[in-house]
Length: 126
Image 1 (cartoon, helix red, strand yellow):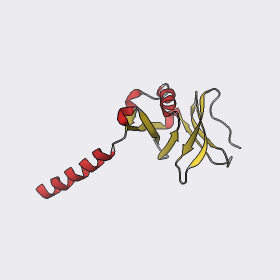
Image 2 (cartoon, rainbow, N blue to C red):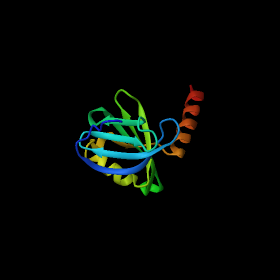
Image 3 (cartoon, one colour):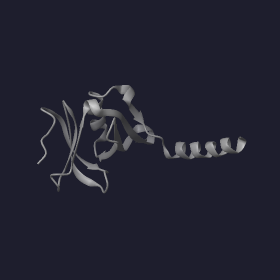
């Protein structure tokens, strides 16, 4: 069984982790870090101390009215993706512990396509 890194939990909410196959569990945001605990497998957990968080990336749809998922990029361990029914609440709680300049929007589908097309034209112009 995993020992929590938090002494106080500010928010506990149902969520999905996209590390490999989708795992259902609970996100716990506390005073020392971000944690995900799997509902079925006790040994499947993710613990990210606030000092280790590099960037929080949110996927915005419909101008930010719906956020289907978000990712946490760490300084050493890579990027972890999560989804929750109340993602706005989760991101508001994370914002209390992470600087606002380290919370960014991900590129939309059209932005990715536009960048790809522009890079093709730039290569042909050379």
